Length: 210
Image (cartoon, rainbow, N blue to C red):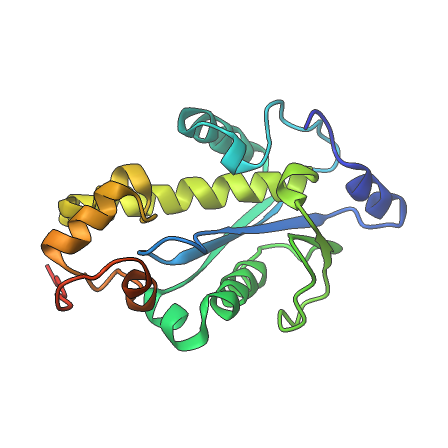
């Protein structure tokens, strides 16, 4: 993704100077929140070389790019939906909630909003949806990287308190190491209970509060 996308350039030609890119991470893991990022990058600056869909980048490259993105961004905000909210709302609506929170926390009012995926009628904020937007639009790719780095750091910090699940390496996804931890140590308050019972039998729920 060497430059601003044609979609972003088109919006600018229509008068939208400040474009917010929005993306989320964490729909599929067995543990942890879903995290969304909304970001406005400066329209007068060239795109940062190497920015791409966070899933296509290695962890060290995401960390490096996140520093550059944070240095240049006009505004960055994060939103999350907790494990309890995911259970109460379902993962789709929890994702919408995280995106809405991120957008409402932006320190500037964007002229246009681009989100990754399909249109979200319950978002209640005007937006343009771009399928595979994290690999097609610079703004969305920047949001994807910040959201991914933020969530990975959160899961790594939780892994210190809950070492049985190897969250520092798997970010809560259902890897063999994570599943082995579920079988041996059971569920924690950070697990999505419905997700876990779908993939493996686990012991009785054990809430760790320390």
